[in-house]
Length: 384
Ligand SMILES: C[S@@+](CC[C@H](N)C(=O)[O-])C[C@H]1O[C@@H](n2cnc3c(N)ncnc32)[C@H](O)[C@@H]1O
Ligand SMILES: [Zn+2]
Ligand SMILES: [Zn+2]
Ligand SMILES: [Zn+2]
Image 1 (spheres, rainbow, N blue to C red):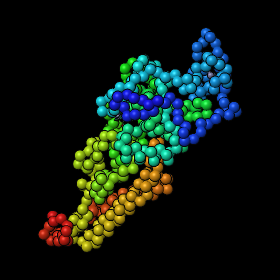
Image 2 (image 1 turned 60 degrees about the horizontal axis):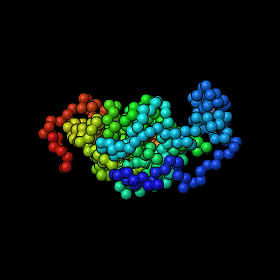
Image 3 (image 1 turned 135 degrees about the vertical axis):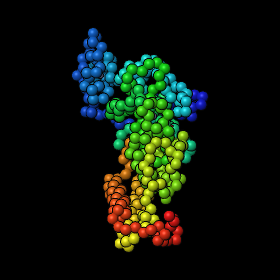
Image 4 (image 1 turned 60 degrees about the vertical axis):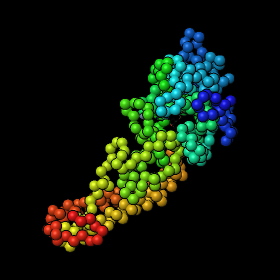
């Protein structure tokens, strides 16, 4: 059935996963795990409560096989035992979901349903969604091979927003042979409170979406803790002398709902003072009286430039294509061999910078310097 809520992009409401892309696993009798619970009318927890072996291992009991029969309480996904929730309009984060009753810590709230698709399909869809202007991301990782896409069809869990200090979490359960994702309360939640979980957002490129969760410990951007985001920040602060922000990688599984492009002089948060304060080796060398000292500095400057340009090409030729190729949630997109090359090249660049800086310091301290009017800057070089 189509969900027709005013202002909500049309989607098909489903309360079980859609397996159009592959068949639902058929659970073999041998694979059914049977617990040892015994129903006792005086002990409500006896019928597959907290002590049930299946519950302890996040497996739902299979109907007709559970010793507690109709009393079994461990079939919450199968019976859609959801908490009462309600859609509401947030400030700046689109729609959200709130608790419509008091919810106790640990309670199963709702299943995250959608289409079960492969990671490849997820990557293609996410690029297509971005080009269609769908800025909200509804694809989440199910396991190493598959994702759940709730963009076009899904349960109300698709409306739960991210928070850096969430009150819910996702948990994976095995239900009749398939893995399913549930949203569970991490603490007691009062009626009217917004439900949130930490997306553990993996940022692989594209616009950086500002996080509006409002938590005191907010990381600032969706995916700010992910490796891709942090590496991107480092990489571009090191080499954006040659590349405008418009050159930045644009492949993305991510929404671009609130593009906030960072510029060198106008970004939030700390950055490393590298480019603006980089030593001009040629400029320094001309003040040294010793030819050997000048040559040494220029040699190290050349090595630094080579190392820096090697790092840059490695990013463009190998790292960025790997990121684009595997730009999907939760997976390390860069092969180990490329990562190793990247680390080696970064070390070479740091070493070259160290050599250059120590050579400059040593030569300034230990060799005679020319008077300012003796220095003859070559054409195009800045004059002292
Ligand atoms: C799964 S949807 C959540 C529902 C969405 N708000 C809607 O209206 O359909 C995820 C998208 O919601 C937005 N969003 C979720 N949490 C956010 C946050 N803390 N700050 C900013 N945007 C957020 C982002 O656009 C994100 O891609
Ligand atoms: Zn049991
Ligand atoms: Zn049971
Ligand atoms: Zn936040």
